[in-house]
Image (cartoon, rainbow over all chains, first blue to last red; front, top):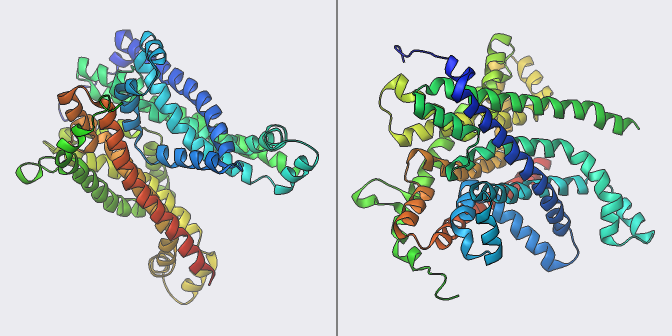
Length: 235
Length: 232
């Protein structure tokens, strides 16, 4: 440590800077695609979790418990190494023809995050007074239509802050994709370290990127909580 | 289907999955996973307590650095913390065993999260308790130590158990620095046998699930029990 020569120029310009920027773009792309898919899947699971049909409810419950109680890393390895035995051949061929590392990471992150998002959405739905559902059912809406037009639009509004936090978690969790060779932020920082032996600078760069991302998102959530949800309460 | 899935790879390597090469070599597999989780959990209990108390200190000189540290760690992925430790500890202290590197990283990371639980637990105790304690002649430190914390701790227990579940899942990241816990053992066996990745990763997912689900259920049970006792 004492005779370590700092050289910040390697991460602020040139080839290694380009690597880090490419890593950041991959991290953002991976997180953005996964959060959209995870939101849709989480919404479906949350509605299934509250359905009247018992098998549907149990399936959703089992899904939630299983994917929340197993490590993300193991899930990534399963989709990357082990999924070929359970997926149909057509899906396999399509996955392999695309960027398979990236696809496996998207699948694992989507499923893992959807289990957390489903719980957030469920508590959002539970916070809507029961009478809303009863009123819309008596007005002739079916269960699914009441959800679609009456309950979910209100629930999603309350659920936005925890959802944005899930996006932040997802962005951090996406660092695990490096283990199967997706060249995201942490992968590139590690790569720069192995090429230059300047670990301190490389890891600082990655840490700063994650920190800026989390400060931005936290500020956004706080502003939304103050401005929008308070307005909602006053109205 | 029978020939397609072959679970004999699990039964053949079962001891390896559970304890690694233990009697004849270092502990590994599930044994090491639990060892890492338990040791990090105990250490981060104290770490979280200290950080939590520092972060609500009356003195800004103490409070702000503590808050900055907590937010720094919470803003980083755990993988990044592990890399930092892997890279910094040897530079500072010479050679450090991989197990200890991982324990240090998990402890730092979990302490930051535990500190939030501690603060929430302390804030859950009515202010009147502290005021009453101080008016009977205790110093504010004594009031915290003997009056507020013992009550607050009881409410924190379910959250601590949840944090322990997260720790069990997080130990899988030790794989990246070559610590032979369950996930690492699984990848080794996968590399050696080549043909059974589905069976191996489904099996370890189930093992992790059993461990984590047991503690998640414990935490729910505790939550109900403590909530009930709190009302009486």
